[in-house]
Image (tube, rainbow, N blue to C red):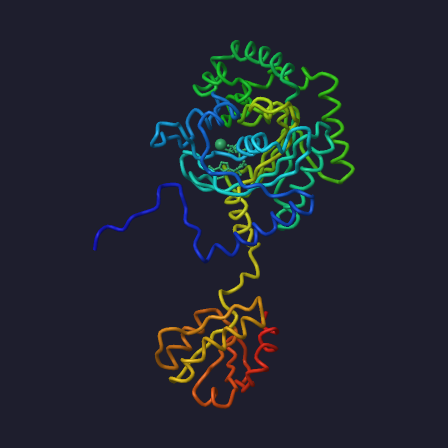
Length: 424
Ligand code: ATP
Ligand code: MG
């Protein structure tokens, strides 16, 4: 045998034993998004490289070292999307969805980043994202955060996630702050690690969320962004907090929360958990009022977030929240004898016509009764319908209960749909 081919490192298969929980999570995400009047948008997985360079920012981790970029056969530089917001804005501009309009959109799908694979961090991963366009006031910030809060409630993980909030102010306020921060960091350069020294020149705000405790200690007396905020930015943040308070949503203000993408202004937030080790951020987002214009559209405010579905699935699994995992089939049809084999599938077709949601596996491949019953057991079905030549002649099936102590019984064909209804 030749050597079996393996999947690309960091790109996972989602096996049948796991797709159940994925489908449950995806269904909840879709339902909650529509509960808030958001519509789905689907964008391509591949975009022009400059879309991400221009939106996410040249000196961010994503653009500097995480993108899957390659030349198309005709020499165009393309990139597997590392996130969804840039594509969503591109699509909105291209199709005139954002021009003088409000849009409330969601998307879901695979994203690609060349990172070191570890628990909760993969090279192909999946995000669900929300984007609201055309609303500058903080009420939409609150509404979108409430939507995220409802996701945790619906998924049963509300107890293990915490909302962290910060405001980055306007571009001008942030630029002034940036100068003050660089001045401070320059004075304390000897206490910074290599990464922070480099960032001090390229993206100094990122030094604030360094994971290195020594760097964090060196930041104790650093100037705070909140001291540089103007009246409007403060007002925006206060309005958001008041709305969250009114809705009973708890939060922690984390002045060092800055996010790794350049396009954010004003509100930024993360939902974090202690239950996932180092990869503790489940969901992250904020306001990006400059992005639509930056990508060639008319200036239009935006607010959104993205959550990592793998991290959600890990969290649900680790907390043992995965209940009611349905087996693959409700009913298994065994067929013994020529006549039964001839008409068995046709009978199953009739029953599928009548009971739309029923999941019926028909035995295929022949074989003895015992073999067919083993397959029936493995299918997870709760009932086996046994068809033999006698049964066909009498238009009755033998129904055998596979998961409960109950005698088998004879059921007339025309009574089978009623029996199937009860199984679901
Ligand atoms: P991190 O700090 O963990 O690298 P990030 O700031 O790069 O996250 P975002 O770009 O804001 O993450 O993406 C939003 C969410 O997508 C994250 O909170 C996380 O749940 C998920 N996510 C990001 N990168 C990965 C990855 N490589 N593998 C799995 N999930 C990811
Ligand atoms: Mg990252």
